[in-house]
Amino acid sequence: MAVLNPPRVLPGLGRAIVNFLIESRSCWDEAGLLDVFKPAGVNEDTTAADGVKNTLSAFRAIGMLKSDPQGDITVARSVTEHGSGFDRTTFRRLMLAHVLDIGRDDDSWTVGEGEASTSGARDLTRALSWFLAQDALGGPLSWTDNIQKSQSEQFRTNQNDKWAITNDTRWGAFLRWAPALGLAVPSVVRAKQGLVPLPTVAVSDVVAAMPATRLPIQEFLSGLAQKLPVLPGGVIRKGLVDRLGKDPDPGIQANAVDTSIAQVLRLLEARKRLTFESLADADGVQLSRSDQARITHVALKGGRKK
Image (cartoon, rainbow, N blue to C red; front, side, top):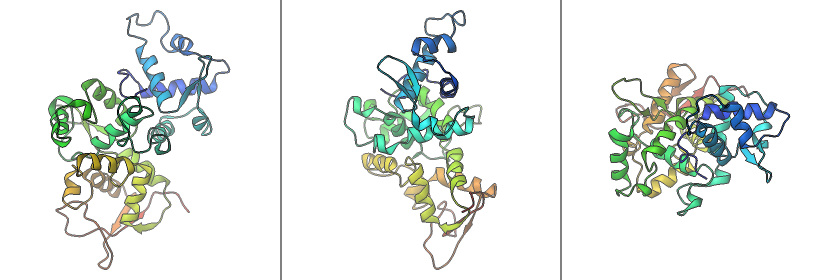
């Protein structure tokens, strides 16, 4: 069961369905939920119900919903243990945790062909790891402008079944998933449609959960990769690098920080969520190859108290 293959998945609708099921005292199967979320008389097009059907399928795949032998659909305990009536922020964090479930999917690049390659959220995490390895300063990514060409060059094949994002249908689904997870932002340039690999929201969430403390920059970056394994140093990103032979991000290739992470860290610094230090006697990193100083430590200002 793939996450990107159903073309009409609506992550926002997933929140409405989850909240509805938690609050309801009745049992609901797919037909019943279709009556609620796509009632008769509202858009009678033959494909109108696909948004609900595809969303149910994808949220079962990532483990937030489950079906019992009788066909009733319920909310997984891994969701209900966090409460009910989820707002957009809380639900986004829950979605991201279920998508990036390494215990369930392991490194999504190491699985073989066939059904195993798309079970859980493996197709989505492969796509996310590749997307976030692209140049954040190179302009928005879109299927027709650059994604096909870049994948052909980086995977060294024109066989799209070997790529991270295999066709425009999956890219259409990715356009909704990546921003909903806080791992991308839409282009603000009207003339250039697409997504920019800036995981600002997701990284900000991780920083907000960290203690307000000071720590070495490498330790901080490792902490990000552990929580968001599609970032450099994370299990899934390492799987991509093993597949490609090298990391495609120009920041990494210049022995600096990944361009996506560098831009996010500059934004968080500007928002006074963190500050950087450069100590002469400590190991450090460059945010970009043009930087003169190396960052050795980061002080978190907006995290939770110890």
